[in-house]
Amino acid sequence: MLGVLFDLDGTLIDSTEVHLYSFMDALDALGIPRKPGVAERFRSEVGRRFLDIVRDLYPELDERTVQQIRQKKWEFTPRYLDRIRVLPHVYESLNALHGNYPLALVTSASRRFVQWVFGATNPSLGMYFDVVITAEDVTHGKPDPEPYLLAAERLGVDRAVVVGDTEYDRISAIRAGFSFVHAREMARLPSIVADLAK
Image (cartoon, rainbow, N blue to C red; front, side, top):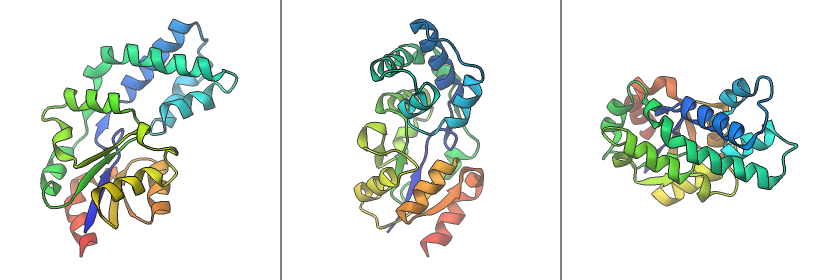
């Protein structure tokens, strides 16, 4: 049986602004200066686990402060949820695949954020997925293969197609031994999956 494993940010939705603005608000609230170019660097890293991004951007901060940034970010996130956008061709592809293949959502985001996304999308993206893997479910995030391997295990499949938009997704998929399809192919995804399932 072939499973289809979807990344979230940049693949199904665009929520970069949600993460960026709530992160900037968290820095401001804690009195942490915005380094030159930090917004651009943050945008380029979306797709990795938030804490890993913060540690790379601010290596001089102790772990307690990093955790405070995360807590503040979550306090500010709800004010930006209306900026979430479902990307083109997502619903068409999910409707075509749902019921024909086991589907999983595999994201570096937290379970709390995923629940917010499910609540903010209409129809809810949550209705399509048999399994949801979030940052809390794994020890090692993408590009480690652990997230996609865990999703396949929970789906009960030994073959999978990973759909993602970043190099982290591609490397993670390849290391897991799965096929990778870039999110830019979303319109053609059902036919691509059908070919791979043969």
